[in-house]
Length: 423
Image 1 (cartoon, rainbow, N blue to C red):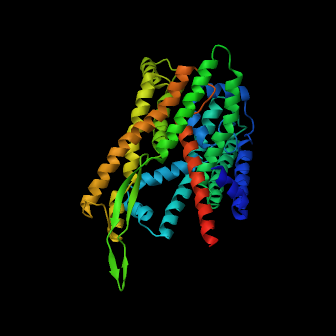
Image 2: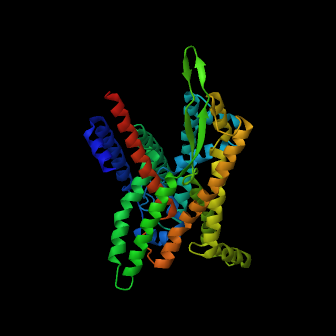
Image 3: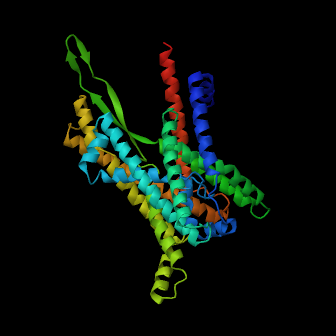
C-alpha cells in the first residue's frame, strides 16, 4: 500500500489529480464550516440530545448537519435520488433497459434524471429540516422571505456538492460522492478518539482498551467480508476463424459476498427513524390513545432490545431485496452465451440462470447476516464497554472501509495503466 502511495506521488499526472481531489474536498469542508445565521447553540445541543435519530443525516452530510451549515443536506438528496431511480427500474422496464442494457448516451440520460430529481428532494428536505429546527428554537427567521432564502441556499449548496462530487469522480481516484462522505467521517475521528482518551480513568481504562480492540477486530472483519467473493468457473468454447483459433480459455465469474454494500443499512435506519421522530412530536400530548401510541413507539428507541431485533431483521431483508434489484443473472447468462462462454456442467440459458440464482441466494444469506451483525455490533459494543464518545456506527465503518478499498483499487488501476503506457 505504501509503495503504491509513493508511486502515486512520483507520477506527475496522478500527483496533480490527487491535489485537485484534495482541493475540491477542502472546498466542501469550508462549506461545512459556514453556519446558517441566527442559530442558538444551547438549543442546538439540546436538539441533538433529544433527536439522536439524525445521525444518519449527519453521516451523509459529511458532518455538516451537526453545524447546521449551508451544506447541512450534504450529498444526501443526490443519494436519495439515485436510490429512488434504481427502485423505479422495478416498476418501469424502460428505465431498467436504459440503465443495464442501454448505450452510453442512454445511461448518461438516466444519470441526468437522478440529478434533476435531486433538486425537488433537496427543497423538500430543506423545508422539513428548517421547519423542525425553527419549531425547536434552534434557528430563528425574521419572516417568510428569510425562510425561503435559507431553503434556496441549502438547496443550491446540495446541488453544488453533487457537481463537486462529479468533478472528483472525473479524476478517477475514487467515487466523488463516496469521498465526500468519507472525508466527513474521517475528519471527526481524531476528535472522537481524543474525547475517549480524555474521559479515560482507572475505572474505565480496561473498557476503553477492550472497545478499541473490538473496533480493530470488526474493521478487519469488514475488510475481509468486503473483499470476499465466490468465483464461478467459466469456460469459453474454441472458435475457428480462418486459420486462427480463438477461445478455449478458462476464467471465473466473481460474485461478491456483500452485493448490496451499505444500502440495506441506510434503508433500515430510514425506516427506524420515523417511529422515534413521531414519538418525539407526540410526547407532550394528553390524549390517552396518543400516549399509548407514544409508549409503543418508545419500544423502538435506540439501545432497546426491540430496536436491535427489528434493525437486524430489516437489514437482513433489505440485503436480499437490494441484491435482487441490482444483480441481473439473466443479463450475465445472456452475455456469457453471446461470447461463447458457459459454466461447466450447466447448459447456456435457463439452466445457467438458475445456477447463478442459487449461488447468489446462498452467499447473500451470509452477506445479510454479516450486514445485520455489523449494523447492531457498535450499539452492542457501546452498551457492553460503556464507551459512548466514539460514535462510529455500522454505516460509518462500512463506508470507511469500502471507500478506502475503492481508493486503493483506483490508484492501483491508474498505476497499471501508466505502466503499460511506458512499453
